[in-house]
Image (tube, rainbow, N blue to C red; front, side, top):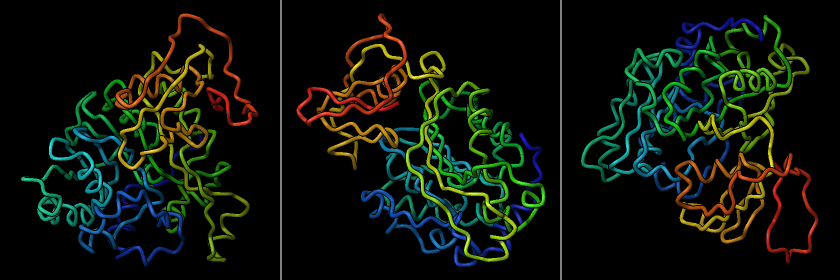
Length: 351
């Protein structure tokens, strides 16, 4: 893995001083055009303009079923995603936002009480802290204290990505979920790109090379990280595009679950079947686990052991029935899609 060349000061300057709103961005890498889930829109309509106009993100990394959860938003900025998560977590939930840019945290802090009133909460359930995501202990995040970690186009900005992901692993509870959107690239970038202050600030210079990300996560015990959505990124500025050469970038939302004793590095077949029973807000008819697992309500689906664990041994377990256990092993799960006429009792999903 290439040595880091980003610095915290570079990022603080770009997001605290250079950029005054998302209109100042030179690329679309950290300015998402995703509409987001339909049930998020009424929440967004309650947020102050200052929170929205100074939002820099590349996706919509807010998973469902957050009621009562403790959520940690890494690189929370002005608090847009944190406030949406607070609405979904409800008055018994808690959202902690961490960001290293004082100007961004100031905006979030200034609006937290007004947003809480708009959400109908008696008191703010958001807590914004100034700090770096590589040292969550310094801002008081304890071991195994968080149910869900979210982040929107920020991990690429971390000078020490391995330490950042190690901290995520430390603070998540068993069965907890990592759900992040970020910029990924198809190769290791040259040093000149990784040191360019504009490309770094635009979330391209520090983009995660897909294979290095896979190796990093596997080394920390995350054996199966799933892609949820992905869209290609284009750089229209000719000078910046020339610096980047042939490298191809995507905005990718990924999810993983802290289940080290249940998640294996290959999809293994135990003959298990998962059935989504409904009940998740915004997912009345189907539950998308990732980009190749769509659980239709009440329709049985053959799944590998990893997928079974993800929907059984996490907070999603209340919405699923899983038939079978791991007492009998049938080898590797057949990932090839099975052709059918639509009348099969069970559908097969690729893992």
